[in-house]
Length: 292
Image 1: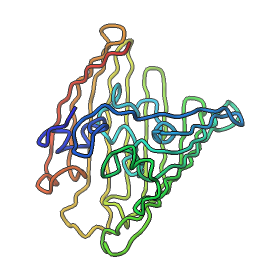
Image 2: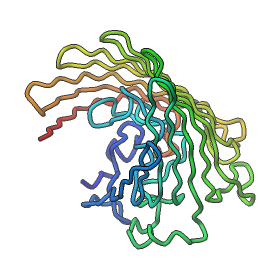
Image 3: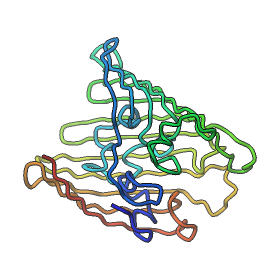
Image 4: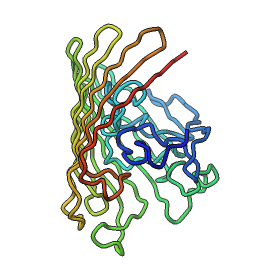
């Protein structure tokens, strides 16, 4: 579906992590093949080769990782400071953790995915030698211990970006991140932290906490996320970006889920116009999903 230029998805992009995931170069919705890959068992793990979604292998969470069934806000789906490419050509290796040793994932791809290119075309996706492109690489170690799951990783995006305070100077983007899940009975928590290069990003620290209560066929989620604007930014109008979300998911019939939600947004969003930087916004939503 084509997002309205004056709609919530366009003006407050962080309120809907699923908005604009399949657009053409004109910003209109389209049918899109997002993933196509080959899986090969290798060394007690699996190698994936082809068109991949990097978030399938990195920065996962049991309760804050699926915008169709869990939190809708971008701050509770993946760490927004990780400079992930969109669906991209790459290779990944995933080794599953066991009771005695941790698991890990490594990922290598083009820095530009399908939605990152100006034409949003498959031809431009395949042309990985464009001078503006580089490589995206990441490695993550994760370890489940009792009722806690630790994930920690580092990443590098070599596509050259202008520095915020001196656009004539260029730099690469890099960062580290951590995601921790814990559970006790019907209660589940997630804690995320991320740091990225302050020379090329408007904010360089991110922290979020999410909670889910599971009751029979229903779930209640509550999350709070915050980005700190970097001291390198010369724009004094930049303010901390805070996002909160409360949602309820009910399953009245097999395969059917209904999820009303409400979000509070304060501060800067990369998709907001300058007039919105200091506004306090409330966003109500309703998702209907059916799986068969």
